[in-house]
Image (cartoon, rainbow, N blue to C red):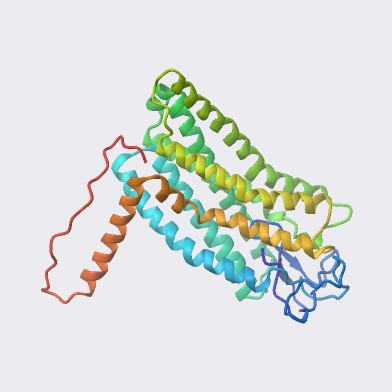
Length: 374
């Protein structure tokens, strides 16, 4: 993400963006490690000058602007569009949960809630508020506490998707067991367990180290935390996605060869879409983090810093794309969204009408049957 705004150096500690989900760290005169610096602008206004040979100039300034204004605009648009869309998704899924009590709706609702928390904590509070509005003048304890919430939000989002994957696997490969055990109560308890575990696993990241203060040689704690992050939010979940999705596809192919119905259901299609998008959008961030960890620190090469900013931007896109996937795959979801929008419009219209003015009859969309696919 954005690595900070440019300007004169300050005496008090300041917050910089690093390779965390929203990546905050601290800089200041009393902090050990190499000093971050600011690139002077090129004649065309770009911060990516060609006269530095990939190295930062030795000037004790703030952390450099790489993505700069482009990142502020990107995250503002992402929050301005993604948050309302996720709220609309939440209302639509809540209605479907109330109607059908299907486990897949519970998991999708929990996934959307985790995405909302991620957008509020990481994009709004972390990047836009602390980084852009407050110009990184944030106490160290606040920054580190925010790290816990950010990593917890990421863990919750990813591992709810793991729950959804396991639910679809059981539904297709072990249908009898799934019918006997997938009750609404057990589903809610599983979701509550994942959210609680996400918060607990976010606590160690209180000590997450800003990439601008990487030590040489690297500390064991820093290396352990970065590998724990990569394993927790990417490698282990993607391993589960690969195994379970492969088993689901093999099961569908076996059904086709045996003459049974082998089409991909809408819930399964949504699952495959969610896991594929996550794998693709988070891959750049993990690759750049490991490259930074073992090859080139960001304070030595602005291109690594730029790659880190762009990778974080791509990863955060994952919090806003699921609505489009649901609408593309599911007719039931589209109808429910239309009903939510219609109800909201009528509510606003009725609220603005003077007393005594009547409203004509309203046509309601038919509710899906209790066993209907998403």
